[in-house]
Length: 282
Ligand code: C2E
Ligand code: MG
Ligand code: MG
Ligand code: MG
Image (cartoon, rainbow, N blue to C red; front, side, top):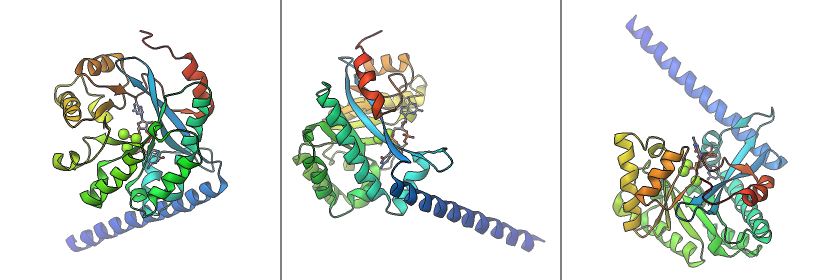
């Protein structure tokens, strides 16, 4: 009996792995089609606020996918599939170009000085021609490279410190800045972090929504001076309440992003939202 149970157990696992592979395959095919069709994938943009001046200083571009049946698929599900299948390369280049052109049009409408942050997967950074893709995207546009920021995660550590450093320095040499996303959730060491030439540290939202709690609140408190010591600006992600914002401001955190300020919105809504926004409304 025990043996049979063991076999059943095994069968159960291989079936769930098969289902998973099947789901991923289906998603890969659908994502491929979405990219070819061109209307199912679109970017949304979430404003970022300078906590000291109360001004909107940046936007983060986030990819959205509305599938065949009209339902949205979360990036937390489709980005990993895109990374595993190299579809992240065309998707990443597309969102970079789209984001630059949206920023260009906002600058032309008087919202000068706004920065655009684009998430870049380590799969993209690993392609040998990443820098020429970046150059091409910037060449075709009137925006200054200083207005563009690339968000990377601690997972770049897999590339090896020397390779990453050289690449990030080449990006910085163009004037483009670097943000380290989801900080605190990865496994990279502090010695690795301090060798990365980054401009901004983004505290992961898991440390923000519990800012009032003893343990994880402490982590956010420690990350602010850590980032500053390393010469970076610190931005808090996922700020949802005024008390979190006030606490972060008191801690000396430089910038914030989150539902309290605004949810990510489509390009068409940005200009009106920016026009209506008043610094220090409360
Ligand atoms: P991320 O880069 O850390 O982006 C921030 C995520 O937090 C976004 O989720 C955003 O909608 C969400 N968020 C912002 N403010 C709040 C808040 O106040 N509360 C809560 N609960 N959530 C908030 P989203 O758009 O679902 O994206 C999830 C992740 O997928 C991103 O995390 C990023 O890692 C990845 N991703 C999204 N678009 C792209 C892309 O174009 N390229 C790459 N490589 N990754 C992307
Ligand atoms: Mg990000
Ligand atoms: Mg993040
Ligand atoms: Mg993330």
